[in-house]
Image (cartoon, rainbow over all chains, first blue to last red; front, side, top):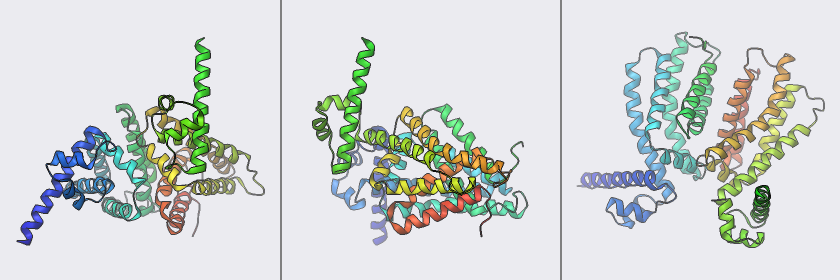
Length: 201
Length: 200
């Protein structure tokens, strides 16, 4: 009984997220109201409010929902690549391709809103993103143990810096294909530099 | 004729900006409306809208000006017994302090706007940020020539990485004293690492 209710609640939640995703994409984050989402999802305004107390929370929930899906596929992908260094680059490339699939207005709204989040929401998000960071860290540490990466490379610090570089690449790539390619090339260059790999492979 | 009209447009634009800056400072960014700005500038609401399609873009212009002023200030700071490396790191600190003394709300609006701005505005912001970075980078280049930074360090790449790390630190630092200290500590750690400075 309780389980049934739980499943139903989860289904409603996902319905709201799907509608929000569609509308943020179509009309932009700022121009989408709770009333719009309610109408699109075929639910009452109050129902949405009881699931998400603010639009910011909704946007973050949406991102975390997307992150969770990604995380699952990343774990699967990680298992298929035996060389740990190759795995690092495969994971980053996958993330990059995945982010390109998310409609740009949603990505932009999300990162723009990140600057406005309350501390608890921001921390929650950082915590979630750290799961990706761990995945990359683990592979890089393994690569270091096997001698693919010089010993003096400070893995946690390098992965942290790479995380910042990744956001920046996303930001630089907003405008067109050319900007996108340029941003990815820079990110790759930075990755090689930080991991102290020879760039002329 | 054409030129005259263009000049007039620039005068109007500046009038709007002056009014907006004054009101942002006096009554706060959130509390300032287009109507307030129109009233103080002695212009119509519509005129303002033609020049600036959002309040964020007004604040953006303001912040850009501040960044350029900051670069001028940095250039004027004398070395006073510091070597080139110390001076570069000292200026890095100055920028951080200046940034954090700027109201968090405004800072947030500026950096948030960067995610939604036009390409033109985005490029202008990058250019402005790089102006500040160039001043600091100049000292690092000198420091490398003087052997204070290892020859293995690629200064341009490092500067770009420092800029990225810096903006991340600003985002982390927003919430209070404790977060500021933590963010700064982490940033310094990254800078030391990137410049390959030996610190325990």
